[in-house]
Length: 435
Image (cartoon, rainbow, N blue to C red):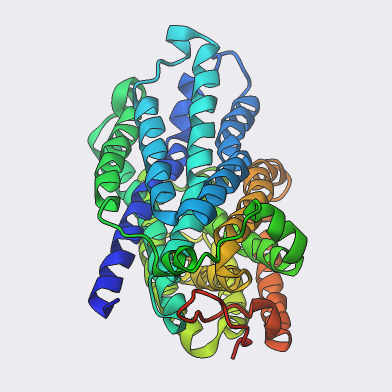
């Protein structure tokens, strides 16, 4: 495959991932409007907040189901068709949210249906992110897997950036009354329409050369892939689960929970919050690509160690958001965005932890189960802990940064855990350690 064709494939994968991630995260940007419209008006504010974040969390809790099912078929029958279906499911469920009646129209059925649609989104994203990493890594030279994961990560960050820009535009244009009346539906409507475009774009993708080689040489495993993963690759599962903890913290705290943190804990206005979130996401796009290049040259262990230090810097930057002045807040948001660079090392470690026959299942199971636990619980925990300590999110990120450094040190001295680096013409992995 030519370099130009590989880059085109990466861009298509990243573009689809951006639109699907936009669909998944836009919920959090309109959470305050959903809290007002989809629950009984007499409920206390704290209970409405918990219920809203609970619906948000259901998307994470059902990620493992989507991840396991999509990965099963992806390892047995090919990555491409699974990849197409995941974005189709996301687009249809997001578009349905745009036309969902609220509590005043259909009562308790409104939050119930919203939760069901959120579950479908979780199932879809469960197959999307691991699928994107697997698909991209198998379409590019083994020594450039870091760059490929960086491009995919930039696409996911762009989804957050797009959500911030869309919400900033709508908030600037519409009044609060208009937002409650119809404005909150517009981001979902746009997401559903863009998802349809993404489905069309993904039809241009071809099956990965690695899977085609496995199928041509009859190297596919005869039993369910997940059974093989659980039986023979427990070490890969453990390191992948720990790595997912790091990326979950980066994505949630530095991206999805940023609007809530800025508004509820630091009393920054909605418009300023969206501006800060957009700047942070833009710098994160740059950071993950540079980190991907660094992974290819220096290895994931080094990026985990250095990235852990950057994450600590981002946590400290979050602690200074009480300072006034928009210029200062923009600088801080750039630091916060750059601190998410360590996330790029995570998929590289996960991809190298499993052979190609069960790679999709191994990555997807480890990622989605871990994300369901950390991602589902984190918003609720943060909402509860912030009542007692406004800097709970900062302390949490400092703990995660220390964990990233520890993972990096472990990988430095035990590189054999990520030994599946290259593939020969038969699609079989070699087992050279990380250099």
